[in-house]
Image (tube, rainbow, N blue to C red; front, side):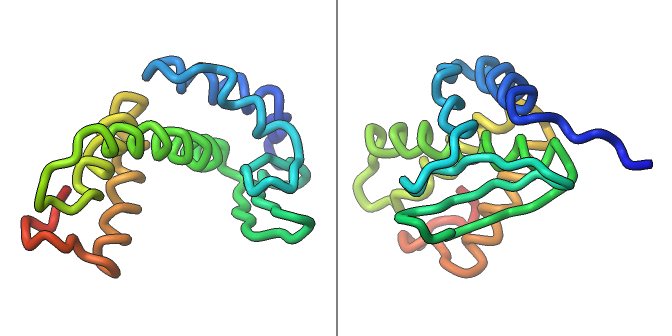
Length: 142
């Protein structure tokens, strides 16, 4: 017998609590509970968790897992990306790749949620940089 999967309201309550630990407004998570065609991620639960992006009637992305922690990472990764992007816009350094403060700040935020989220975020960024290295000639790490 497999473990019961959490329902969307339970998932969002957990995401809100984790987000609150780094100062995110709980309202940011409301849209994840409502299917939409606006290219904003939303959740579906059946025999697995689905993180879905649909725009104008076409599905543009679907990640599926049975691991609640992985789903929570996807949600918090998206929200911390938005916060880190705003941070990077306001902390530009001439001659420095814009992604350095973006990536650094996102990993910092994820690390304040949990060591596991920090590790997942750092791995994702490392994968990005393996394909698209920094363009400023500096160190390979953010």
